[in-house]
Length: 106
Image (cartoon, rainbow, N blue to C red; front, side):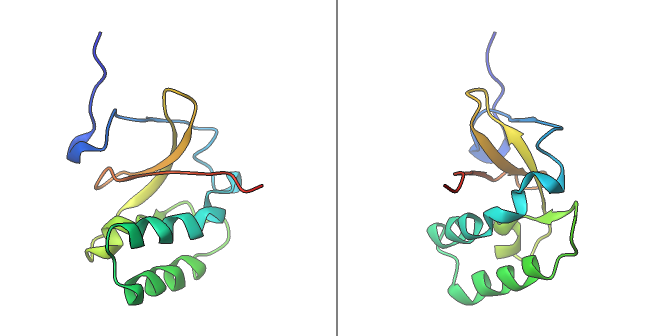
């Protein structure tokens, strides 16, 4: 049985993990990693700073977390927490399917 591939070449289609897809799991704590992912894709610093402002203005417990990659292009996307097949945690956009693998802080 083959693995399905997500659109836009994001690798295997991730499965949404309902236990991770809640706002109290700490996804919001990964803003520095999301900003760094934007920089790695060549995003201008002014847009990264605007994304940080928008992210920090989200209400506590927000369910609709903006996708940094869609934001870079003036689009709206929603991040959901996923667990890859190897158990690694990531967030994936429901619009562009962009993924960011998350490192837990120590």
